Amino acid sequence: MAQQKKDIRALTKEQLRTFFEKQGDKAFRGNQVYEWLWSKGAHSFEDMTNVSLETRELLAENFVINHIKVDTMQRSSDGTVKNAVRLYDGLIVESVLIPTANRTTACVSSQVGCSLDCKFCATSRLKRMRNLNPDEIYDQVIAIDNESRLYFDRPLSNIVFMGMGEPLMNYNNVIKAIDKITSPEGLGMSPKRIVVSTSGVPKIIKKMADDAVKFNLAVSLHSAIDEVRTEIMPFNEHFPLADLRESLEYWYAKTERKITYEYVVWKGINDRQKDIDALVQFCKYVPCKVNIIEYNPIDDGQFQQADNQAIEDYIYHLEKNRIVVNVRRSRGKDIDAACGQLANKS
Ligand code: SAH
Image (cartoon, rainbow, N blue to C red; front, side, top):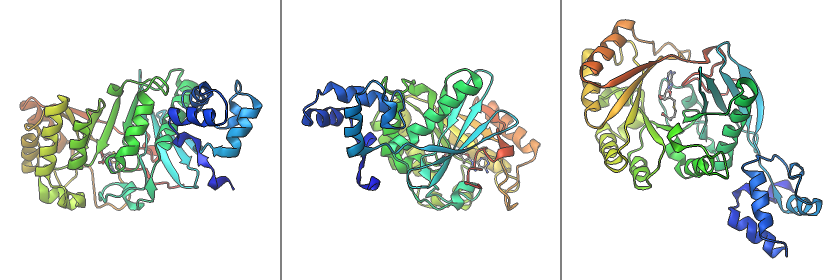
């Protein structure tokens, strides 16, 4: 039965080499197969054309390749592409290709559903089914790299962990995927081109600093006042801003890398002067920049994008305090591919 066979990509290169040695073959065969699995992204053992038929049969008897399948692909009028990706057990996650003039960014998922409960995010309505494996995260990236070459004639340039799920709640697998993405045996991408976005899990932020990770960190802040933040992101009750702040100070002390705060401004929720003052104050703790994200409505009307004046006020006060602020327009709204809209509608 197929399920009893092990996913070959759960093996390290060393383990693959040992497998071949035990079969009385050369350990080097393991390197060859490993390269097919990772750099060349083989979907089946038949793909491995320079491996003998006998070896391919041996592999098929012992292993499976649990490769993801792009189930449906939608293209937005602005060029954004959304993939609904089917996993080996039939579950589906979504990933997005975001093209700009000179970049292609992949927005990838880290969990099926999400364990957090942010009130404004469509993904939070799907309960967390399971964590993605490292190869399931890696495959999403490869699929988008291929699409980027096909549609835009260039390789993928950046990756953001801003799809479904909370990456820091699946830290080990996210790290393994990033290791593969950045290693010469995988995509060989620079970690500087990768952003991991989190709602803020202080213990793991500290661990990342201890692990001396080389990618960038973004934090979905949305409010610097505990009562407001707990209202819209209820897990804040367990991970309050003081703990988040402490972990970010620790991060900066160890990595010396700026943090990006993601921030949506909603009417009647965080559009008062005291909300602005609190954000300005929070930004003074650790070197950072602020990305103000446009709100993408997710139906129920509880949340509404604030007036332009409120956004202007935020920008004015941040800039007056020498804090870098960008306003990010949404991409792919017409196909539900924008921030917070990934919810497997199909
Ligand atoms: N769990 C991680 C990864 C998700 S990233 C995190 O929270 O950072 C998705 C980003 O889009 C987050 O900054 C999130 O707060 C934001 N977002 C969620 N719902 C949104 C919506 N409806 N409109 C705009 N941004 C949204």
